[in-house]
Amino acid sequence: MERRRLAYVVLVVVGTVGFVATVTAGFGFTTADATTNAPPSIDPQHDSENGPPCPPGVTGATSTTNATATAGNTTDTGPRIVELYPNPTTYGNVGEYLVLETPEATSLENWTITDGHTTAALPNRTVSGPVALSSDPDATDGLTDHPVLEFDGTLRLAVDGDTLEMRNGTTVIDTVSYDRAPTAERWYRTDGGAVAAGSQPTDPADGSWHPRDATCLPVSSHDIDEATAFVLPDAPDLPRETLEKADDRLLLAGYTFTSSEIADELVAAADRGVDVAVLLESGPVGGTPQATEPVLETLEAGGVDVRVIGGEGARYRYHHPKYAVADDTVLVTSENWKPSGIGGASSRGWGVRLESERLAADLATVFRADYEGWDTESSSTHRDTTTFVDDDGVGAATHTQPSEYEPTTVPIDDAELLVAPDNAERRLVELLAEADDEILVKQASVADDVAVLEATIDAARRGVDVRLLLDSTWYHEAENEALAQELQQLAADESLPLEARLVEETDRFEKIHAKGVVIDREVAVVGSANWNDNAFENNREVLLAVHGTEIAAYYAAVFDDDWAGGRSQWTLPFGISATIVAALAVAALVGYRYLRFGETESHAKS
Image 1 (cartoon, rainbow, N blue to C red):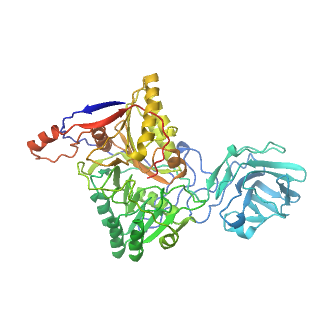
Image 2: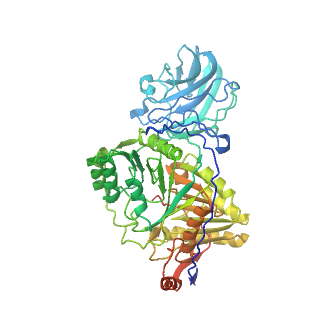
Image 3: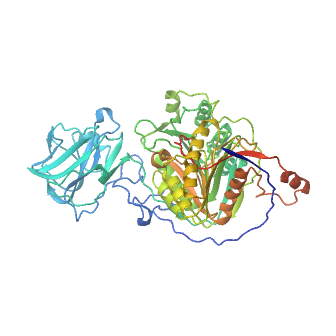
């Protein structure tokens, strides 16, 4: 491992660049009525430029019942099985069902369904469109919006996998095979092809499993004139002041929440008549911190509605976003609502604040869909059933860090709202694929096989300069060094312009917790998603891709200084004395580990 000592000279650059915001129409979301706090409705289908359409019935527009499924290409298909729900979160899987879709009025007389061992008769009815078939229609009725019909027999949908065959007399109409059914997930057919009598079983690859009532949202793009960029631990006042200014609604989403100061702000907002709601993860890695309990008690006593999300079969592995909607202002960060994060006592994090009625409405829709879901419970119930754990180890704040980078409001072109697992990975891969000159990645840790890393390496193969700055705290050090060592060999073998550094101890922050990317110094991505498959495929995450050279330059300047160990003068006040500038220019040397890429498995879920 090569170590370099880097001396640096502080450069003071004063300049401004003007921009005219370009109009980029949003799609997929419908703006809420500006006079209410009600969430807008969501178009259930992706735009063709934004990825494949959502599976039938997966929209997120409602949160406690599934939206009505619609037929795919019904003019080209015969009757077929389009949905399976073998493993609902009910005792004994009562209410399990399958959905039969018929493109035209069809008599089910003499129709049966069999798993090869048990055969059940379908009701002698004429149906058209999708209908759910179940042995317990009363229980199934609460799990689907389709009309529910009872079949005659004791056929059960096996959790461990099965092959189901639909017959009309002796003629095989359709056959579907599936492996073990994930808890509380539905299988939706997406192949769209015609079903021929006696055809081979439909493979699970011709469809996809989706958690019950999970959203399937497209990226939404918004024309916004300006944004306020900030980093932590330098600017802890900005998040608190954002909450303080709310007049009508205040929605706060997080992973963990231990900040009594933020709790007091939420109670104060409720006292002045603001509609306040909070949604947190019910089972964070390592357990719910002990300091969360008094925060929940404070919020409950102050009349703040708090729910936690999680448990068996929950829609998301972790509810991991860190954002707030205050009236029409949106705040998105990489930091938890705790002293070491938002409080500015430990973590290097990124954040951004924007004001936009449409963006706020879209993010409020995400919040409401998650907040009102079947897999949430009240904070009082959570407190009664949860064992809180001491949080005096990983990530504990030790002291307030110095403030070097002031929040800066700059013009932007537009901003895109990305959410996982719905669309964030796909869109981020697209942005990385569009890079021409440079990619800067700041992450706590990176998994070796995640698609965004592969897209970053592909960019380096195109000649794009790539740098990764990774955390070096004890619980990330080994995996990040392994990542560096393996990709060091890749970079050497292919002569790729790839570099990575593990940041060493510094007096500027205690750990890297940011999950940020700067692309070509034109786009900055700020949000909660760690670079691992769990974040993009299973977690609820929220990110903003903000387009604009000035805001990208802000985060790039912080990145460059953290990379080199320098001190940024991005916001150096006018009139600062020459003595101070000289002192900064001869600042102490800072040591860094200098590594090439390697391989790791990321476990960061903070």
